[in-house]
Amino acid sequence: MHGNVRTTPPQSWSTVSKMRGAMTKGFGIDGKRGAIPWDSASGEGNPSMSMTMAHFCRGLHRRKIHIHGEVPTSARSLTPYTMERLYLHNAQFWTHPNIDDWAGPSLRICLHTIYCLAFVCLLRADEVLNIQVQDLSWEHDRNGIPSLVLVLHFRKTHQFGEIKPFIVRLFPHYLAHLCPVRAVSRWLKHSGIKTGYLFRKVNRDHEPIVLQNSRMRRSWGFFRRNLIDIDIDTPYSFGTHSFRRGGCQWLSVYMRWPLRQICEYGGWSTEFSHLTIVKYLISWADDPMLPRSEYFNFARPPAVRCFACNRTCHCA
Image (cartoon, rainbow, N blue to C red; front, side):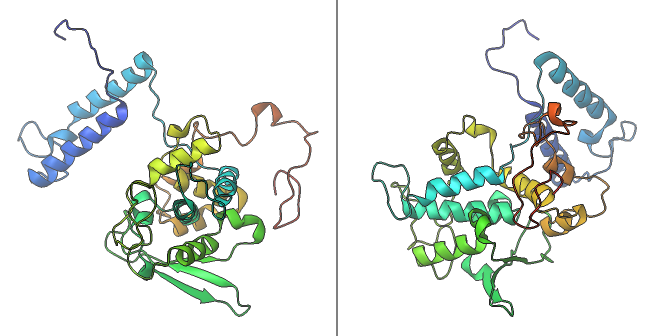
């Protein structure tokens, strides 16, 4: 604009969206202009919701795509296979710790518990880290199979209560790497935590301070280091939403849950007016389920046998 050469990279479209959202909230709440579109004639309404602002943002988004090649990218989803690799790698340090390793057995057991709860219960980062022991209870069915009952007191989509509990039964042995019942039981027995936050603050030696009731805050940095342990080349393509997205895809593709059941379980709206759940199920950043060249390959070998239905077809 002033003839100066830019020395810093331009801000991403995600930053622009956040800035506009902050403006809308600022004018709406602090400025007491509400969520009414701006009317230039009367000077009433929210300026950030004007047609001029809408046209500018739409054009800016289009230019960022055409000129800078920027494509909005969501966090890459975790697959059950990656979860199993993390489980097998961490499990070898539970009983045989390595002094030279970046994490001891306590932290690795703690991280695996966080992974399982976030993946299976479709929890956000703050939701899983704010879990307290009082939020957990145990049930047994008539056959003696245990179930973990998790009751959250706050969720992003349920800020006024009415949060339905998560009731997770003991998984079969071939899904032990995803089982929250086994993971939570192991962590409670290892840590000896009886009350307060389930996941505690970590000291300089990367070990949870179980005697201090302060919430863990750095778990996702440890998560990326854990991905490097299993030779993931792009750990920064994963984020706090990777577990929620991966768990959603696991329930849909592997567990064959209907879309409405996933929405009810994960806390999404079942009106299907905005289809937010589609953003969790489909993303170009995820690994493809099948190469395009194999779509019409009728001579494809059978898939891995499903332990639930014993079928080997790709539609199982």
